[in-house]
Length: 256
Image (cartoon, rainbow, N blue to C red; front, top):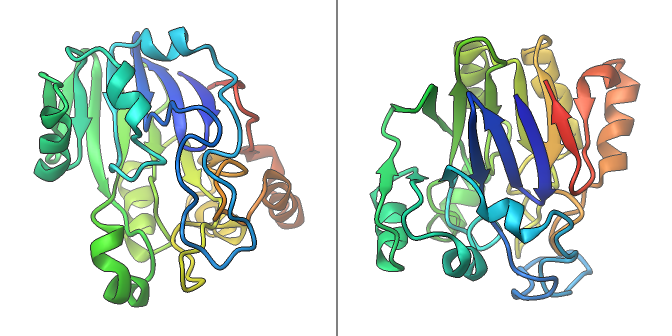
């Protein structure tokens, strides 16, 4: 299994002989608005340009989207991707959004779905604490993660835009992934609330599933994310588990 970190949460995943583009944000640096935040950074997003050639990102077998916030599915992705590519969506609302811009093969992952030799299973995620969702729930919306598995290769769990909850611990226990991809930029919303995991949550995941290798992403690409790759490495080193935590730079490929 190969995981190429593209930018933010965008990735190229090669598993079971299949190339899957995950959460495509393909726009140029500054092509989107800044996110509402209390962080003292109001630069337009994304903060950095793509390093991976665009042609490589478009040459895929399928697209997997955890949710349709613009840092996971942007206008450039909608404009550039082949309309006949299979797109895996978390729910009917997201599926309708893809169909409305012309995609003809949209598949809702309700439980598990096969794709070639790969089984894709949707997992639970929560885009903020209960208190955050009580106030901002409509804005946060539903989000999901996915587990991808095939015979003879490591199983990978893409946790999605999630905070640490008992549901995440349960998904780790249920699926026992060899590799877990975490969004750890600790994005802060307009009232300062944390809406995705941060560096300390990497330790929570390691403690819950010490056998999984962790790939920490969704950092240093958006104005409202406060945690850096170095922050994650420091937590892993302090906890004595740095050998199983990866913080790939944009364009880096990890082979498991």
